[in-house]
Image 1 (tube, rainbow, N blue to C red):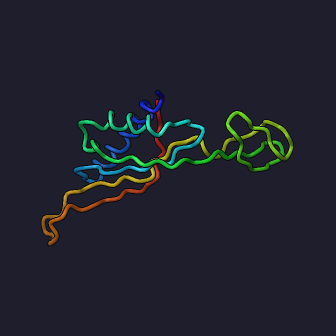
Image 2: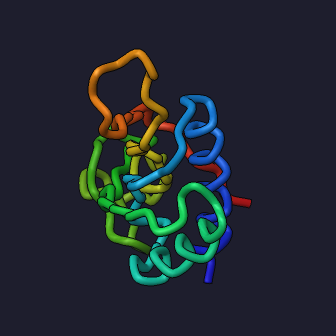
Length: 139
C-alpha cells in the first residue's frame, strides 16, 4: 500500500504549514493526484486517518482530484494524453516522450481553525484556508 508512504509525506507538510499559521486544528485538506501515481482513494483515506491520528489533523477530511496524464513527444513536439503503458505518440508513432503532467501529488489546500485575536469581537473560531500548492514528496 504505497498510499501510506504518501500520507506520511503529506502529514509532515500539513503539520508544518498548520504550525506556521498558528492553527489549532486542521479540518480539511485537498490534493491533486496524478493519474500515474495509481492512488486508490479508499486506501489514501485509510492511510490519512492513520497518520493524522493524535495530531491536530485527526478526523480531518481529505479530498482528492485526479490529474490526467499529459506527455510531449521529444521527436515531433506533439502534446497528447497517453494511456498508462502506451506512450506512443499519435503524431509520429515514437515512444520518446516527456511526461509533463499526471505524475505528481500536490497539496492544493489546507483548511484550519486558527486562534482568534483576543481583541476581536467575534467569538467563533476563525477559519484559515491555505492554498499554496505545495508538492508533496513521498519516500
